[in-house]
Image (cartoon, rainbow, N blue to C red; front, side, top):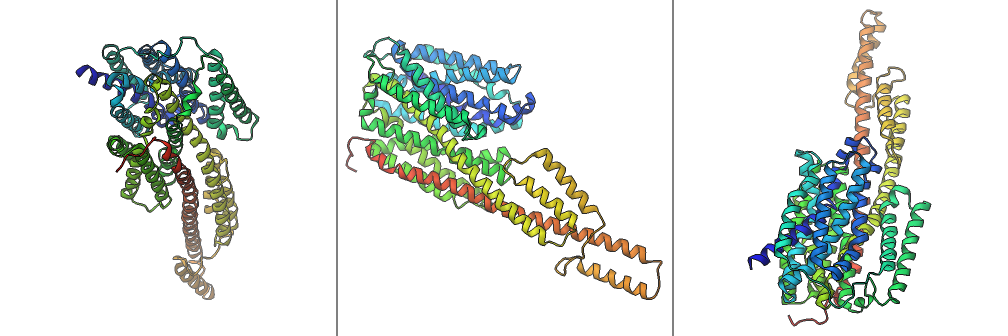
Length: 574
């Protein structure tokens, strides 16, 4: 019993590391960018290469593990992952860090899909819900806990600790796997490797994932992205044709004849897709729109991961006493409801309400994680390895598609919000009681600030130009009656008029100077009020863009509801 518990701990640590590194590094990208004095586009490859390797090699690793031993492949993956985590710490250049991250992702691809089949072999298929509950909870905790943990490390430690934490965990995990896990295979397949299938599947996933992840960077209509996506689709079609012909296929496509496996895999794909809404989209809203500090933002999102951690076992308990159709359906409904509620978020929404939404969202994802069990529940035990590889890969591909689709929708909405804000700003600036020079400089600033590709250096220059224009004393306008400084100006104007009539010219320069100062102060107050109005308009318009993305996520989740009815073969009586 002690050996089994230690083995389960080792497996959960392995899963935790593999999933954690797909999200935790994102928090360190700005620090790494500064460290290597590079661009954000270049440094983003640190995340991209990891996801690419994870997506490309996951199914192949699961197949090789079934053929040559799951324990062997798991240990090899742990060694690769841990050693290249250490390499990332000492990477001399950004290029080397990117290369090391790719091999770290390869190690992760060898670890992640093997946790379930090894766990089933360890405790028996009759206890599969138990191992799935533990693994699913840890997976959710790692996926959603990456950003807050990364935020804590960036806040208090050096960014290299993001990779350093893998070293002690990796060594402990290797020790536990060596001494507490027995070797297992799929004895129904040969050891012949389907090299053509490996190449076609790897190339197809590479083309699609690269196109989805880099569509925003290179422009969706660019030749590079179109070629990548088309090549990926063609290779996957060829892969399907080849797999139906060869005697020893990489993936036995007959597995998809089991409807519970196909339905659960599709729902897992969708869960990876809509998880982008609370993990990435919402995090961006908190930091970029509401100006929350990274640690503050991630502490709110961390509630989601904690909820998943606690709700996954509850979901297992409910599923065993009802059925997997019920729990997957409830999970999808809760996710749909939570995303609909997120469309109500404004800049006035309290942290308490935001946390409530995260709890509801986390409950939904915790329940829907039962697809890990329902996907392989009716597969033969020896096929749990390749089945686990497929469902883990589907979630990864779903996340990539979610990033591509939902972030693209967000960008369109944000750009539209910028345009509307700019038009609104120009309209109120042109009507404002400020000098002509201030209007020109203010409008130039708006044009740059709210363009689709605003340049920070140019923006800083134009802000300085606006401040200079606000100090000029020529072409100043008289404050309006609504302005707080109007009465002061009117009093000085009357005094000046009286001095002119009495020919008391000694005080005229002093009065004139004070009038100019009041006009400058009044103009500054008008500019400040304009900035506040424009900023409020921007918040309103940008929030609408985020609401639309949440609504699309809710719609995707809602349309998936019918699929949940195929995740179990029969409904137990309630």
